[in-house]
Figure 1 (tube, rainbow, N blue to C red):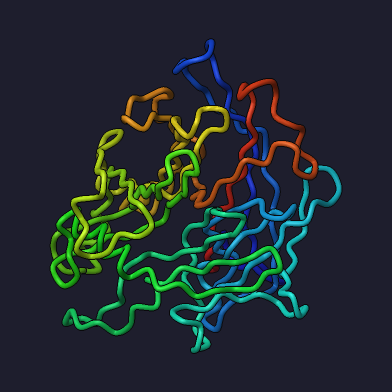
Figure 2 (figure 1 turned 90 degrees about the vertical axis):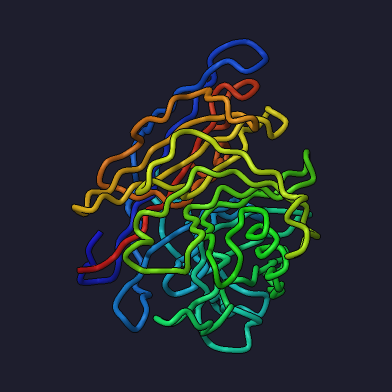
Length: 333
C-alpha cells in the first residue's frame, strides 16, 4: 500500500478458521470477515514504514513488528473493529525498537517471525548472514533472536549455532547456500522449534535468482542444536512447491495438540501481482484444507489467534471457530 500524506498504511484482516468433522483429522475451511486499516507516522530514512511482518497476542496486547524500522507497535482496539497503532513501550516508558545483532549498534532488525516460549516473546529475522556482491559476509545481525519478557526487557540471543544446524541438515551451509526464514513456532507439546522457511538454495545468494527460490520444507529441531547436529533435524516436505510462493507465517491450530498447522504462503509474481494463500496440514503433511486464495492484492505476512481479544468474539466450542488476524506490509511509492 502506498505512503499516505500523514504516514503509512497497512491492513489487518480478520476472519475465522472453521473445523468440519468429529474429533480427529476432519477438514477445515477459512472465511475472511473484513479488514481494518492501520496507520502509522513512523517510517525509516528511506521512506518506508508499516511493513508489518509478524503478529502476536502477548501479555494482553496485540503486537506487531515492522521489518523496515524494527519498531514494535501495539494495535489498540478502537471503535467497532478498528485499531489505532501505538508504539509498544519498554519498562522505562521508551518506545521499543528492536535492533539487530547483539543490540550494540543502532540498526533495526528485519523482524520476520514471532513465537512464544516459557512465557516470553521471541522475535526473529531471516536467519541469514548479509553478503556483498562477491559473497563476503558483511554482518550476521539477522542471525540473532530477541527474547522479550513480560516487562518488555529484551535479551539478544545468538542463534547462529541453531540456524547453522538447520543449514547443515538441508545441505545449505554458509558460503555454499542459504535459508531465509519468515515462519517459526515453538511447540510446548513436542518440545521443538518448527520452521517453514520461505526460501532455500544450495548455491550462494544471488539477488535475481533468489526471486525463484521459494521452498516447501518443514523443519523441526530442539533449541540446543548446533552446526554439527544437522542429523537431529527432522525434514518434511509439505504442499506443492512453487518457486515464487513461500511461507510467510504459520500457526498451530488450538485443540489439536500442535498436530494441525494453519499455513500462510504468499506469492509475488514476476509481473508484480501479489496473492496470499491459506491451507491446513498435519505434521505429516497430510492436507486437511486444500490451499486456497485468501486474498488477492494483499501480502499477509503475520498471523495470530485473536478469539476473545478486544472486539473479537471468543472461539466456539472446541476448535470449531478460531479468529485469525494478519498484517500486510506497506511500501510507499
